[in-house]
Picture (cartoon, one colour):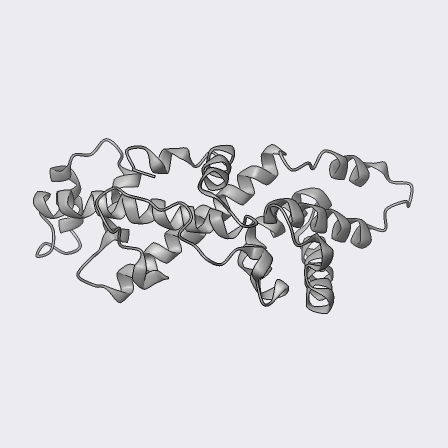
Length: 228
């Protein structure tokens, strides 16, 4: 899908373009591997160490390899993974040993937990950015990742200022007109990638489903000014 992320028209994002929802994944373990970073971060918070988190991850992945998503192949992937990591954490900790601290931590871990939502959002954003970076590597004449990264780091900078910054690395490629040409394209491409990431974590997503999840995850800013 990297080759197909350029918008069909300026500032237009298709919220249901993705055709790979998690519920139809051929390999449950393989699909979940995409989201190890947010899951590992949350497990580390719950269990108190990366070593314990990695142990729980091994339990979770072994289960997915063995039985897949099973009868729980429905709804949002982030809700499924939250239930799965809670179960893996209980198994790892030996819950019921008289230590109530871990149980309390698990009980506060709900689908709308601020920490879980933040880790999940950051994980999806990171995947979208990496996809944009891979696109640039494959299309050297369209440095959309570079210009959007510099703009994100300097949100108040004008096209001329951004061009001056970028000229330090490649003076032949950058001027204000080049920035003005590429920056809107880069923003639309990143928004499309975010929409694709969100759609793939939903079951049979509709346009309204994707829009709702985008807002619940706090990703709406990426779509300001876009036609969706």
